[in-house]
Figure (cartoon, helix red, strand yellow):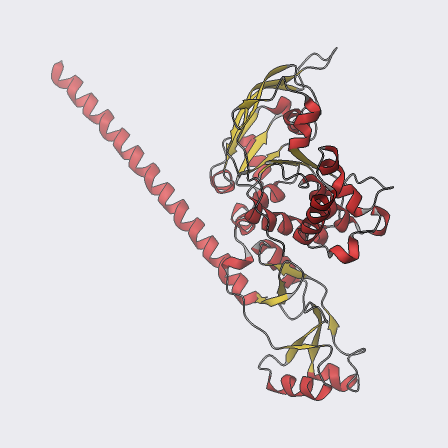
Length: 414
């Protein structure tokens, strides 16, 4: 993977940010104040029409505020040229928003070309970014958006948003239009990218599970972008501020915490593997030696391709073309335990292959490992609830004691 050594994140301060539309009785966004730290991923989550996208778009002034200030790294950007501001702030939207008449490379090169980068520097940057988002530069450089899947288009959209190496990346429901499996993989990719790049990311979603998975902090917004709670995912799950926030958390807070633990945090086991180029006799030998009664067949790029069992090979008369079961799903090390659990539950053998940044095999995680983690989370929740109950009882006892002392003191005075 290409090394990236560009600008890391910038702090963002919103001070009484307001948007009023002519003729509307109430402001769409009403005096929002918020501080976002450099390198932090902050998620805006709230019901449809609450003003979260409007608030996001005011940060790069795609929508002009009617009141308040915006500071990026301490600089007040409320009055500077909005076009210049937008070139310094990456922006990714739902359905990628790629220009259909431009190739992948031309789409990514758009902002660097506008700000005057040289041809050689642009070419290097396009290649670096395609590599970074897990697309082979040789394969995708000259393709047009219509030749890409929805997930590939979103990857190109993220690459384009990062092209001029902005410190701030704004993302407006960028994964909302793709299927659930692709969405999970794109979320994992964003987590991996952020661990490498340390940008400041402000991300809008209506999906609370996505917010938990991606956010360092979550801003739960009511109507007119009033902040109901702005805190870490753990704090919101365990101590929602009020009934409105509790409604977003919903039932099963302990299970939602599976979105806070990554596959890389649990034991990833190695598994017997063979490749499509291995001689059949060697594959039979590995199958016989396998304590699991199956091996994982990898393609020529080292990616999981098929699960092979002894019976499969016998029935298919030794031909790899007809043998085995295609790998239907994989997870990355940045996937959450919830993603892994869903993948394992849909697999009859109760395991899922774990892959690296380019889809290459790195190991397997199984049902037993995941269930142990679920039990640990539930036990931690139970202990936390007991501790909370104990603290409440102590507070009540102290209050009762104080009231008794007060009554005794009053009696003596009399």
